[in-house]
Image 1: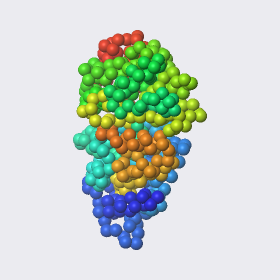
Image 2: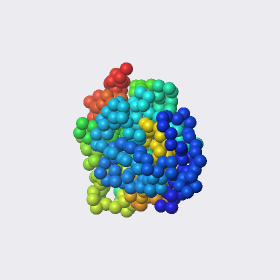
Image 3: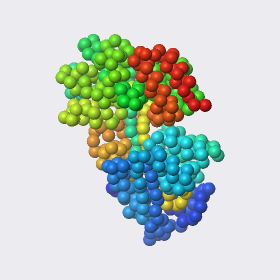
Image 4: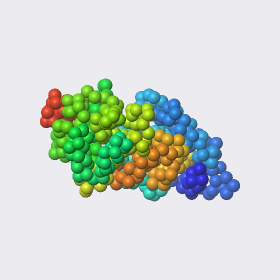
Amino acid sequence: MKKTLLVLLSLLLIASFAIAGGQQEEPMSAAVDADDPYAAVRGTVVTMAGPFVDSDAVKFENSVKAFEEMTGIDIQYEGSKEFEASIAISIEGGSPPDIADFPQPGLLKNFVAKGYVVDLNKTLDMDAVKSNYIQSWLDMATMDSPDGPIMAGVWGRVNGKSLVWYNKAEFDAAGYEVPTTWAELEALQDMIMADGDSPWCVGIESGAATGWAMTDWVEEMMLRTTSLENYDKWVAGELKFDSPEVREAIETVADIWFKDGMVYGGRKSIATTSFGDAPKVMFEKPPKAWMHKQGNFITSFFPDNVVAGTDYDFFYLPTVKEEYGRPVLVAGDIYAMFNDRPEVRMVMQYFATGASVEGWVKAGGAISPHKDSELSWYTNDVDRKVAEVIQNATSVRFDGSDLMPGQVGAGSFWKEMTAYVSGSKTLDEALKAIDASWPE
């Protein structure tokens, strides 16, 4: 943990604040006690709430132990499976935790709009924060408050979605090569079909949440066929679904999904195939399909006896239009500050460093978005490769449906895309229905 200790020591000059009550408009400074630089905060408590429970909660708590031991600050974390409801009650009831971890920035945005969240621009060393994230993470953390845009949080654990999984053993045996461009992907699709197989396995059935896997594909194509500005406008409701930009993204998906022979089972099977069952046909002998796009969680649905790097692997979903760089669709946790005290600032500054997730990364199940994190921390090939994809991204954006109003993102968007995929509605009908559902 030498790296962690060095990083923590480097926080001394930026995070050792004099104890003082009330909110401060500017970062505080104080003389450092040479014998105990953390004397001013030792013995203090920082409360934190979030969705981490069970093993995730243990991994989180273990990852901050070194910081707690060095500084003497006790980070008291309370996780809840009902986090969305419980955090609203505590914040609006006037007793928020010092820090809250939001798995969806859309929920945090609501509290920022009501003026509950502390602006990190006024409390942290933002030069250090900004130097440790690519611009997209900072853009997604900037939200509108009653006083204008603020830096509402810093990003902790994240995950990548722009991944295409394949049966590596069979892939190699067939002589197929991993595509790095959209043209190469199209050529690979044609080659697989010429060999008599389906390139893709796709399923979007998910009970009451049926359709979300289709919306992920649409979000991927929005990032690959139009600008980040248009993606952000679309998520905010400023760019209609029934617009040329969104139509192009959806039609790019349809060009793959609806073409005869492209998807195992054909278009008619997509809406009735479970998202978790869909990739299993890759592992039949011989494979019935060869590729599956999904986030790294999908490996939990793979057969128990397959081994990463040997039996399966993944590659980055190539960009469609080169001018939009190398975008990655992500999910993740953003930490926001609700009470301004020196020890809370110190913890928040720490969360903006890779050291804060190093232990979790080494335990497995976490990817760091921080520039100062190291690939050597990752103890399994899948996590390491996902981290590389995220580190190599020129831009990242959060899952769009998670950011939209609930009646759209988890409502009409899922429902109407399912209707379009199944053929019960035309694209025109589906897009008009989604736009009509957007709240005033």
